[in-house]
Length: 244
Length: 244
Image (tube, rainbow over all chains, first blue to last red; front, side):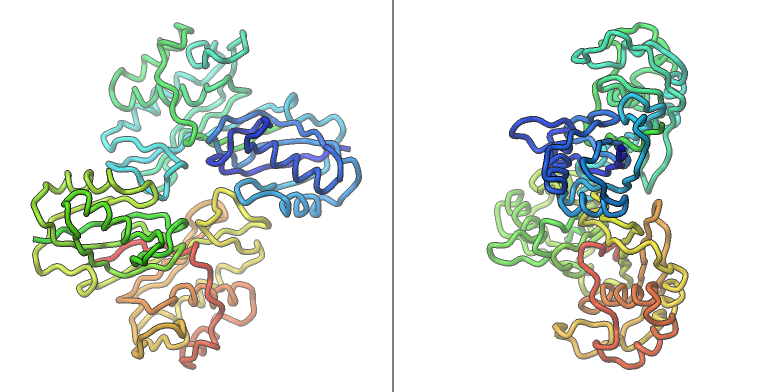
């Protein structure tokens, strides 16, 4: 038997998802909570690690419970031991075949930004400020070139350990999510290290008219990191959902 | 000459608006910033104080600048000295007749809440969690009885120094502001101490079917604090705007 957990977290005060000695991490807090409940170490497996500062609305984790506890009670029990900035929003029993990491089919990320002439306290650490003269329509236009199966070699951090950069993006669009607030939504079969943040940095260049939307296509074709925009800050990024 | 500032703040780490010795307050941070700019003490006057934990999207303050600085530069200069959780979102020169406190005609507050079976990390300190079985339509119905000129003696903290509790509420409605997220918007000519938080606590009783919407009318007529609901927590409350 396995249990699948869906986690929401505010990444601000975490050194990222993955457990690290002497650092506050999401995995660290989760495994500490599981140890309190089961009185033994319980390894957890995630749909994907997120960097320091990155938030999640629906990160997925699985683990094999050493003893049985009812679904509803598992969620409440874990939440009782978790701090306020990470919680289990759903817990369900899944078959032994389930694997949070290897069986994910689709992931959706969001990059949140707002138009303002000054930093906004209520969005601090939650969204990127951009200037009010940014051209959202041009950004939307640029995002369209990313859809499809491509080699995303221009959109991956040099620190990535991977060598195959071919991934499929099913959709990439910008939606209004509040007054002067927007979210870039990107859905794909999997993402490379810093991919969404580099995509965002590139679309910002389009929005600020540094180059036209079509340049996104050219950057893709070049397959070299140096042609894309800067890596946008971690705090605007949200792992929205993982589908199996 | 006077300058009118519009402030946004995240109230989480403040002991409220009003300056207090040895406490971190919004007024304290603002006056510290003004002292850095003008090299002297500059008194500020607000549209209204908010309690510890209460947020603002559009609190209004005025002050008399000891020397002239251009509008755009005043805003940037003050923001350069303010911490990330309070910023000036607008600064404008106003006539000497302007008074942030005594000339306000309308204030709009919002109380933000979300429906969930568990606390949500990304809304922690920003909105109140309510159970998913709450009846929003009944709450909307109850809110209607508050509209108009009434003696709000049932909806004021006993700590209020005031004796006249007659105020006018122009509108009171609940709107969906996100997935499973709602905001109670209340607009009036002025509010009593804890008024919106007690209104929210009372409407929660309606939503949880402790009494029908019509009971709000009866509670109003009784003019005694003990008949209304509990004071809802400060962290769900937002001062949205002040009109002159």
